[in-house]
Length: 605
Image (cartoon, rainbow, N blue to C red):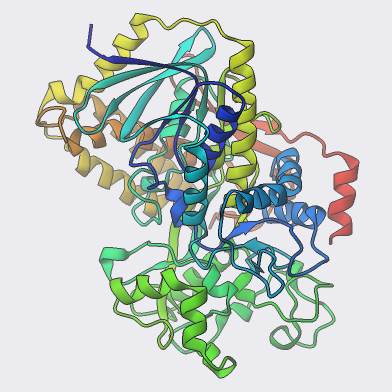
């Protein structure tokens, strides 16, 4: 029997970003013992990279905004594949979650009369994003951490979870190891919350940090949970393109929200071409002079750079493909032009976009107050994730297992609106924590077999016991990422997807030969070898789902099926693990939306 440290909690939260921290705060406030596990250091969650703001219909800048408009925008942005109940709860509860953060000490930017300031963002009809310059995610994490430490919880830093533990069908804990010395830890719990974030590291060019290897998606799947909407991967239109060392690092949509415009290498503002009919004011004489973001919007013109992210990303790719791209395969993003309209434009940009100013100054030697940025699409966000109950956030097939944030699917459908991610974290993090605590109180008895602990230990040690082999884990990861970027990226087609599935399964078959030299102390090769199981799981789910959906919708774009097909609008794709370990994909009908919500969508246009 392998040696391990045993730790017990009532509720175990895996992941310490916005969703994990909010779930831990809520569970702890309910009086249960809470453990919080993070793969990196506390405070280094990927949430800190969310810059532009948190979407909530506070109506501080435009009094016409409200939850019904936010709900309609979210459903429209998701191409009506979203879980409508989640979209309803999100729109209704995000204002309260924003005010809650303010009460706990979040220092939001302010309107002249002292209210929380809100900015425009892609896909939102009115200025809706509460923000702290371009450091909103960082402020959210700071606030939740400061508040959370007073609630009472144990934090386990630099611990990687490799497997969930079960008692029959019920999830009752997790097996993992500390990344410093490789010592095994067995966490036993009455309820478990997955809040592990995204899977961007399955791709070569991504805004995600090293932790984003799809751990939670894979952990839940292998424990019996279903994944949904995995074909929908958001490629943020503006990541850094140059120099190569910073390729993929996010350039916040807040730059465009503050007036940044996109241009090609001819200096042309190309986003006015081919605006989707849904967003054109049909009474205008021409798009550039009379276009409004949504028909009936206030007279102030809205720039087409703030169309949904999927559309902007595809437009940049089109400019590159047709020879009008920037020198390094992107487009130019220009915020410096506002000097024509703002007296102290340099001070304004530094105040509104401090992180972006320093990011480009330090990493690319570019002063964005005077020069254009070179940007291009980067793998950013997974709309798909673990299937959960909208109200409780418990997984639909595994009792005792909850999920919130990016690891949970449902809210965003085919495409996420900018800013909805941060409000998603706190709205559904709060619900996951509340109902996980409730489940723990109502289901106190459980057991964990030594056999599954030993099986998990054996699996984790296998790469070390094999030693150095011909199959290097870093090489294998690079092969997977390159293939995903080429064949399962922004533009997809049947042959490429079929080839990708074959290559993923081929690499999966080689995992048994992958070895890692050295021992368990400070061993990145070992960590990467264990991450590969998760990366391969999510990659196969993405590729299978993408091949199955034979249309283009939202973030999913097929070269061989370029049009949206309404015949594909009434169901989601669900992925689950079959009895023989094979990955099974099925269609699942979308439940009928309540009539009052249908009426809201029609009324909001």
